Image (cartoon, rainbow, N blue to C red):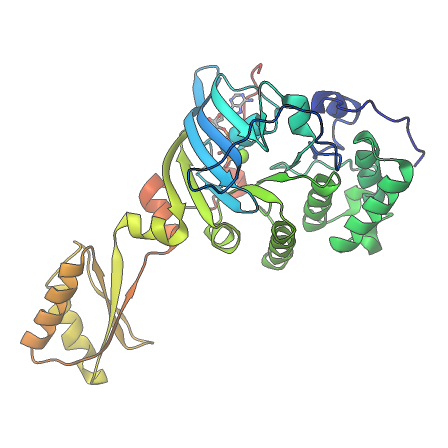
Length: 375
Ligand SMILES: Nc1ncnc2c1ncn2[C@@H]1O[C@H](COP(=O)(O)OP(=O)(O)OP(=O)(O)O)[C@@H](O)[C@H]1O
Ligand SMILES: [Mg+2]
């Protein structure tokens, strides 16, 4: 690929996208250029720096209130997982925070820059891997990365070496010269991630980065994201995979119909939902059935007990500590002896279902078509 002319510094994202409508997934940053700008210093109450601060963010599309007053914080060098069912507003949030659309109300400050007041400065410190892979199919992997590097104002030499380093890091060196249209879904996704890293962003948005990938490729992407976080990058990740949230995110925010409906650490969220499960193993394995019958009559959390024949345990849903005492009392009153008893928090999938009333990870073909309206 021939080297193009250098683009003007601070080229707006829209202009980059206009030149290469499919090639740019990165709204990215040129390293070391955060100088001479007015930054809004932003610290959390505990003194930990906040890299992304969102307050009361609202965005309408026609009559749809895609964001309905969203508040969230992402602390520097951490991953915030934004969970939500289809249509919850995740992509709209990411698009607002990457200056691709303008919110109707509220405030968002990223890396010290206001998304509405300081979009040009902001674009220099963020990277974005959008929900749908956006590499240029006709160009090779190396050409895609090189082009983005040049659009981000890197010299030809820098763009080439950055592209090669990222191809290596994302295990794409062997495929570097092949057109991207010959790549598998997982390879395209990795190329997309590499593209968002060209400008060494401080804050990276990943919008459902592993949707549609097989488990092995998903693990590879997770390993890359973890490596980026170790390097100090702050990540806002949207996902519908609970496992992904547990793997990557320290903190979670659950949104539904444009509103935050819960937030906290994974254990905190599990505890918020309230339900726990007691796993009780009788001292004598022959007492498994009588134990199950005795406990089933209690119906402490309103749901039936189940028997896990493999582990030889009875599973009892409870909602409070007092119920644990009740369980022990009921067992001993029947002359049965408990061998072991453990408590289990609900899985994140159960938490998600309980909070949103929807199962996670809906198949791709069930996703609603977006109707584009003027933004
Ligand atoms: N450009 C647009 N024009 C019209 N409506 C839109 C547009 N973008 C989003 N919406 C609507 O806003 C709401 C939020 O959509 P958004 O894409 O942010 O959801 P999401 O959480 O990313 O969903 P998914 O998990 O399916 O990607 C939906 O009702 C969607 O139809
Ligand atoms: Mg989305």
